[in-house]
Image (cartoon, rainbow over all chains, first blue to last red; front, side, top):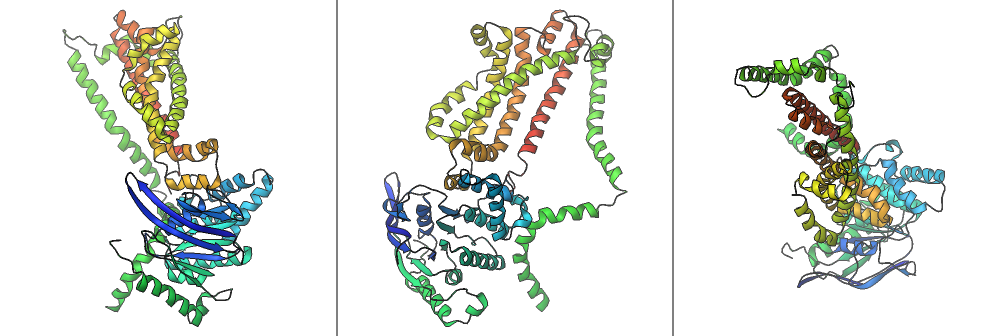
Length: 264
Length: 302
């Protein structure tokens, strides 16, 4: 298996004056093209920092990230991020939020009409064509997140980075969106790196689950292969032996071996 | 027992989506629910409630003023004498009877023209400088102390320097407007830009927006509410400064009219001019506030 996205010995130390905190240590990870990887861990374990490093929004102190044979250390549309709080621009309509990204990425390569079609196509992928002229303030939290996903997909990224994308949503909306993401992954075959703290979400969506130890100086504690065939159906999995075993393994890691210590 | 137990836990999870949808769902319901016949009296009532109290107060103050200044030793004219002496100024703002004998409307327009140029320049320069100061920590460190000192200089203190530099009264008056209005615009713009959420900056970085695109697509809309606060303070200060500046520089403006009326002891004319200045200042303030609320519509509804 050749690595499409390679994290090699990534470490991050935040320095503030004389005090320095090591957040991540020696995080190495090989991700194949089309793979869906989840990173799970307790809050404060540096998983968001790790995602920001891959996105290029934060620079690694040691190590580096290689995507498709090239080192990346600045942000760019080849690593589109779906932010936890959607990060849509409130003064633009749903359409314009996606169109801004499309215009920026495909300015030189596609005509105006093609960019318009591409914007609508991506809004269609997340079932948001009914609200193209609404502003983010006028649609629900789940819809905002759908638009956020559409914006990221519209950049045709090499890897899609999801930063706890469903964390702020209620359970029903979250399930809907998870199904949408699975559908999109099945259709487009994107490489996806997702941060989550939801065990069920990780097992349901991922090919592999990367479990982080508690910080400071968090590292990759264990990587679990989820051997469930796709397409996966939420209801059928509830009683599936492999699903239950995977779920149990993650729960044990998080709550037995690396229990969250409030003081840490 | 079982009914209450069922209802209470159900409510919290239902609330967030209903609150989100509230903005669009409530409006038509309210419009349809309002009974049609009750609508007209409602508007009349709303107008009466806002117009009648200040109108009564003006009448009351006018009466008090009339009584106060009707005595033989009064130094200021009562409203009745203002009406008698300056009726032409009040009734026709746009008469032209000679090169220096024109309606107050024309004079206000001349002053407004100066304010438009000075304030327009201040808005462009102020937003640009504010953007630099808000965006760059080093620019802020270097420039903020300068701004804080210079903004306390009273507008008229700049006038001699402006006269010396421009050697003409009109550009000097415009410069005074500019220098008066620019500080609140710079400072508010800088605060607005410093308060741009990190999320928007991240989006801009991922999209690789260049500095110019970032300025137009993220900075300006995001900081617009702050910028308009600065513009509103700025226009108020400009209007304050133009009258004072024109008193000294001369010309046709409303400020010079007051000075001229004072020199020829036409006190009633001065009082009419004060009313003009007050009303125009009020309209200017409303105008900028109105434009601001149209432009920033939706900006805060994240």
